[in-house]
Image (cartoon, rainbow, N blue to C red):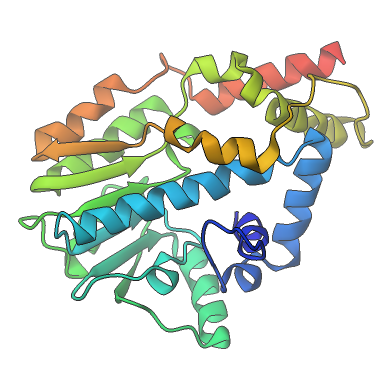
Length: 279
């Protein structure tokens, strides 16, 4: 999604300014975004990450400025650049957790660019599917007795239900009263919403390209108007912030997540295949 952040940063009316995004995206990132937008016949593949980025920027800064939280944890941080581009208050310590290979590549780009953090940044090389990641976070200096703000961005809808429960239970066990959790989830209603039609069509066409070794050219669902300006107005539709009164409050969110059994990404794939057959 670094390519989408790059494009947004070039706008005069940008929602944020990410000077590292282009280097992190690389040619591969821009090519992927262009393929998805071409398949969707819409700019929607690049809109969601832009709105989501700004939404969570505001959430994290509000937690650190107004609520006084000084521990920020980014789970599955990927190519996130908030440690560098946000104006953090003093004494904020930000933890980035992700796979070693992801963070290693990211560090190479950051070093080559000469970027400097606006807070204390600590990287934690872990696999969040393993039981050992909480210990690694503690070893990096995280203090579970102090309030913290967590962000799980763009991850949960790729995980099986049991993995989501396990991750949130661990987060709950690591949080004190007054902690905050930000995340994005999808329910099954999204797949029947006109808002999702362009992305569904894009995935269906991309799947058809792989299976048939040809580029899809079927009509698919109708295009939606409005573009980025319409998306800007819909920013409040992200239901992403949960206040936690200690560990039970955060862990209890797992019981309210959508889905009954199979991962939602599998459900999405089945719908995409159906659209491709219809086309």
